[in-house]
Length: 182
Image (cartoon, rainbow, N blue to C red; front, side, top):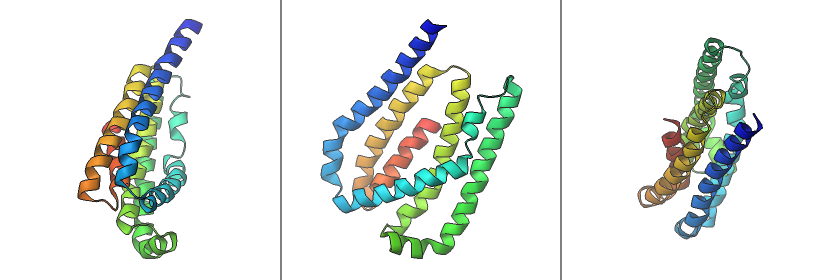
């Protein structure tokens, strides 16, 4: 038991460390592409996203681990996905009505704010999916998912700079999460 736990810990640790190393190596390139204002806007959006994901996810990702049987866990996973989708739609409707006010008060790009809603659902679904993979002891897949997410984020953040420099950080990060999730 302890040997398996230690092995799983090392697998997750290696995946997380690898993902962090990718970010560390890419940071000088990304910091030369984007200016301080764009990073500030990105920080605000990620802060908003951090709060919204907790609400949208409803912490069902942790509840997936609780049921004894897989059929009950699948139901919790389904509820988690539906809950995340419906709350994302609710927040989308709210943001459509107040996006001008929010973007001007927080001094963030309105398009980047709009992407936050898609991003919110992707992260909520990802967390539920990781909850399912944890239940099934798929730690190697979780570790590779972290590396894939980071690699995708770095790649698309650099690519999006040339297409949409004002919102490239947000869109690139969203694509990274999307790749890791689906």
